[in-house]
Image (cartoon, rainbow, N blue to C red; front, top):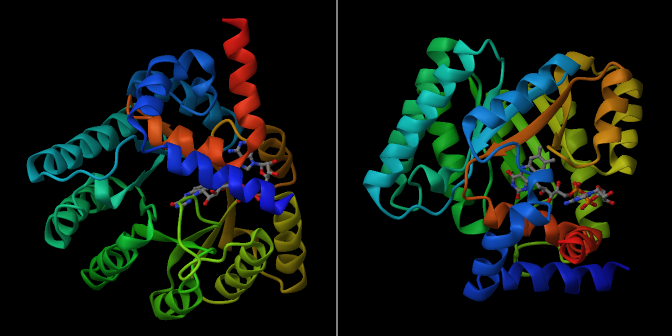
Length: 309
Ligand code: FDA
């Protein structure tokens, strides 16, 4: 039920900061099944997965695992690494987009460092034709991330997009403020632990907010990425798009690597654009914990593998 899932989700997200949990999961996680959600611990491995997905007809993106960098030199190095990843993907003939976490590139050092590094990556993307989306992280970073998006657009950089999280009460206002840019917006439910004074605690409310945001974005100028594995919402959006004559090139579905793979294929076969979002690198721990928190059954999947070991 909703209440049980909420307790479960909050429990896992709380446990994520526990050092014993972290050490244990980092040691055994890959063997126990993290590989299902991780395209590769190296870029080379990820490229094989990305090529397979593109050959099947999917759009793709990739993210280097990492977040909450608090020193400038590390953040600068992450931007350099993204530029190398963009060049490598091009050299491999892949059309893979980039999705990056602003705090990985230094938003957590300062707004200025975050902007400088993200701008460097987006400018490089503009040069070679690569789209660069900023993911949306936990609520302290929302203002900074949206501010950087506006600054990039004001600077004439259009190969970039943002994310709005349906669980945040503020997202409907944020969406209205972004619409003048004809933005490329990904809509998600929201993956972090947020207090009830800023985010809907109930799943039913989040789902309703998701549909409101998606419908508003789809009927405005711009491009909408419907990022969810929720079949009910996806079918609702398809019906809405048909009823409102929203062309298929104005939106896409996005799902995470390794999740709801049957649904990914089914939408592709129905002629929709489907982007599979991948991550690579060794810092997969917080990402894995967010995926476990989303679905109690994932923990069972891990427990079963632990018994087999
Ligand atoms: P919901 O949680 O209601 O799940 C619907 C169904 O999907 C479940 O019943 C189950 O069948 C399946 N499912 C969902 N999660 C699963 C899992 N982990 N394992 C197996 N099955 C699962 N969040 C954020 O805060 N900032 C961001 O930038 C992004 N970016 C992003 C990109 C993309 C492409 C996706 C798909 C998602 C994100 N998210 C995100 C994560 C998002 O906020 C949310 O946590 C997840 O998408 C899970 O919610 P669903 O929308 O799938 O719905």
